Image (cartoon, rainbow, N blue to C red):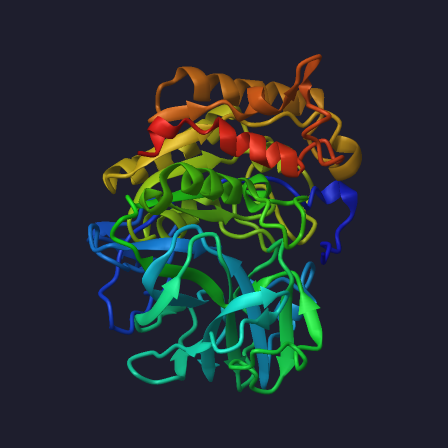
Length: 452
């Protein structure tokens, strides 16, 4: 996996959780408005401005089977994304939550510095790695054309494609970029191997031409499917814990993946969709040049714009605590020398207000133990001051009754003998992020009555 080129003291790797959904008219080329002019269902965006697309109408049968939060390219952590692409094809490997008989892909240039021309987009079923099952690759179109230009600050949704998508299936979305893109809108910490080829190889079933690999998703921000039996979309919304940091690469071992498999095993074709809108290093209150817009700024776009959105599971705030008061590293600069629990709680209330205004339920996860992580990441995580803030925030989550429900992830993951630390069985060894078993335990802790 590509590691951020940061010192330990910058606390580059953190945690998160994301869930959401919304709407679009099938068959139309839909572009996101520029940041600052966004709205959802005629409702002005509160908090910081964010670009938002309205996708499938509620009750239309469209849900989001996969998604990833877009961020701006940073030369500090991804020279590949920052340099962009020219006459190259990127093959993004993704993992569905539910199936359907039609699909639409969303491509994003939200953080581009100029228009991006897409020469071709093909989707196929993964056989192994970047290799496709022969005969499964299909071209996507945009208003009937195989190419499309996406202005800076916008996103585009493909035409519906009739294709049998299965739940819990790996698909490859290959995007040919014929002209220089400039810095690429991308999702850095994919926990998934991606493939890069010179020239147009979007329709190739083989992977021979893909001579370079990377661990990010480029330009692809969502895949929707037509599945009238799915009772909506659940959005896991947060930072690196939701993003699956430290899980097995290519293992689809993020906690939202485990939740999707749990729901599929229980409900089969009646399972809701689950999408992961976590971003490594993300914060509730402040933006970062490396780790994306704040939760408040991106909540409309990444959560409430998902088709069929009905529930959001929020797990975020540890980075607000960890980064508070630190000197700027080039990735972040705190707006206040000391972020308080009250400020984080006010950010939560902003997200709750946006969710409820959209008719969406929002559940909160308690902030998980991080004692011992200071040796790895620096910052306030694992310090007495940081622990005091974590406990204050968790007490508010548990007692305020502001959310529609609470999932006590802290209790699930804590060491029974020392609750300030992660249970050794669940620790990925950095004392902040769970390993695969810990992520599975988190998914198992989500009350099913929240999601039906």
